[in-house]
Amino acid sequence: MEQIMSVYQAVLEGDADAARQSVSVALQAGLPANTIMQDGLIAAMGEVGRQFEAGDFFVPEMLIAARAMQAGLELLKPLLAQSGIKSTGRVAIGTVKGDLHDIGKNLVGMMLEGAGFEVIDLGTDVAPDKFIEAVRTRQPQLIAMSALLTTTMSNMGTTIQALKDAGLRDQVKIMIGGAPVTQEYADKIGADGFSPDASAAARLAKSLVE
Ligand code: B1M
Image (cartoon, rainbow, N blue to C red; front, side, top):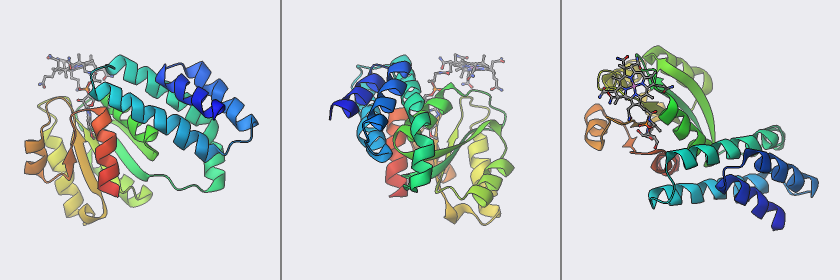
């Protein structure tokens, strides 16, 4: 479909204005919001992820594509909410306590959104209590924690312990990432998964909620 291809192309090219415009044209042509999201926005972000992993796209290209995707998604969100379409899953994401780095976390959040997740962004410097509160009040299937400092990554383990102490550990899957984080560390603290970048994070998140 020509209108869907325009949405797909706008996201791939990272053109936020064209993304908004093409989503609007597709809606005017009577295409369902869910089709525009799945076949236009989400499909394009899948291709962005593939190109990133192939080394054809770098972080800046992925960021501008994700921003274009979000621009298009803003127009669809109210319609999707009305039609009661189920999201891929709900994820609460945050940078752990003591850590203010959020560029990677935001990128992961955008890729998750691009994969069809409802993303609750808890921000930066997120204490274990805030993750606990989010699980209690918002019932995400997944918690995603980011850390960029060797001095703050231990707060991922502290958060997992706090969830255990609160009796909530079994209610959520937990994935972690960030420059100093490794699979070995994820295994050590009992996280369900680790991913080295935002594109792999979206794939991991899907596999964890399936
Ligand atoms: Co900071 N900083 N910083 N900093 N900073 C680093 C991380 C550092 C490596 C620089 C260095 O010394 N070479 C170093 C950490 C050393 C260490 O602990 N090993 C460092 C330091 C020391 C500090 C301060 C302590 C400096 C100081 O004040 N003395 C201070 C700490 C503040 C705090 O947090 N309490 C600090 C402050 C800052 C700024 C505020 C100035 C700024 C942050 C702005 C912001 O985020 N809004 C900043 C920046 C920009 C950096 C660097 C330059 C870039 C980080 C970044 O955004 N990268 C960084 C050096 C570097 O990495 N070259 C550095 C781009 C981003 C897309 O990558 O975040 O790695 P990244 O995310 C990737 C993956 O890691 C992964 O996917 C992303 C994309 O593919 N990923 C996940 C991330 N989270 C994930 C979660 C997942 C899965 C994948 O699942 C949940």
